[in-house]
Image 1 (spheres, helix red, strand yellow):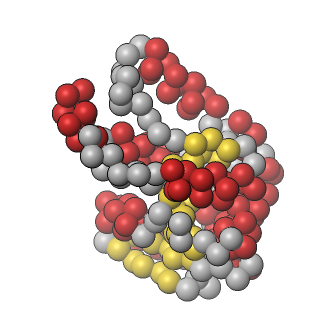
Image 2: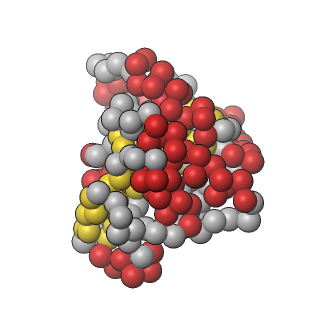
Length: 197
């Protein structure tokens, strides 16, 4: 695992633990020699995690669509900034550049990026680890919704979602590394998806 994509808010949220966790996650990634791939902005948790990686000697790749350059203010200190034409290109490039995904607290954009990766994984399009960093139980309502989807039969047996949940930033790297070591290609995945859908 050489790179991790972090999805998180362009704001700080109401709880100071969110910002502190972003700083801690950035430090842990840098100290583990894992490069950050993120949305390219200089604001909120997004900017915090990127600056923390840089402050501890790590490598950062920011990927931002042209129309967000002024709104999110690019972080100029990163080693690599890629400006793309639209959100679809941004998300695809973030996927291509990353070995794993972490969702920190954030808004609807963070949720959309997380759910897209979970969907692609469920459909057998990738087996990269996906981790929800649920500091202060941020992701608890979403996890409850997933449980509700299972109970009501919309997440069916054999097509369950593959994800990890951590409560503290220091858990992230060990959990992702363990998941990466366990991950193996699933040749039966395509046939199973066709059967279930």
